[in-house]
Amino acid sequence: MNVKLGFIGCGKMASAIIKGIIDAYNTEITGAEINSDYAKDAEKRLNIPVITDNRSLVINSNIIFIATKPNQVSGVLEEIKNEITDDKLIVSIAAGVSTEKIENIIGKARIIRIMPNTPALIKEGMFGICKGKYATSDDLNTVEKLLSAIGKCTDVEEKQMDIVTAISGSGPAFFYKVIEDIARAGEQFGLEYEKSLLLATQTALGSAKMVFNRGEIPVQTLIDNVATKGGCTFEGIKVMKDEDSSKLFYEVIEKTTHKASELGK
Image (cartoon, rainbow, N blue to C red):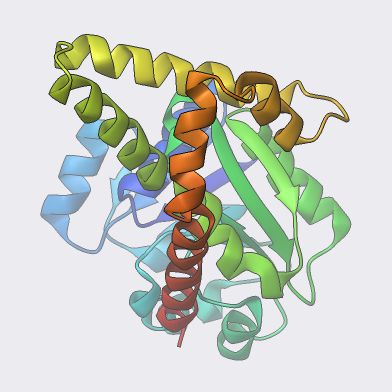
């Protein structure tokens, strides 16, 4: 893509996006880290120029990703707001920080807000995306095109972004936990851990693909097709129902959503 990308912040999430874009496109990317040691480390890790001047990065970029911690966003925006001209597109990945809050600091600017996740590192990312008051449909399409090379995008209303944060932003850790718990259970019953982990991981991968390819079939039908009454899977599903796994995951998403909302305040 014939654009210059700038990333203010080169942490784990930004690095996942940067690496994915580098693999997919021949485009110019520059990073910024205020700490010179962090900048040198990021430059070495990502093989891109990483500077310590946020204002310079904004001046020399067409699309600027705000990839700092949520509590640092306001300070960064105050620093760069005079350099944000009409031709700049701002993309925020800060959890909990609304486009309205960003607009209140930098004024009438084109803002796209996204919630990415780390599987972007292997081009299997999931991105919730919404646009601010002054962003256009073309802006949204441009960001979606960038991200589609490293995962899937779904447009949501901004009021739903904290839920997206809980489901897909934080979600990888929840799925890792489930896979690890199943693998450890297998180990406790006598299977070598690495073999148990392989079984759990490949089964999770295959199951996810089955859900993606189900067409109009409800997920419950996929469950019923495996958990036939009186069979061994049925017994396992019964335990999950008795222990109320639905309530557990509701609470997981509820707590995470609430925390995401708090981060932007």
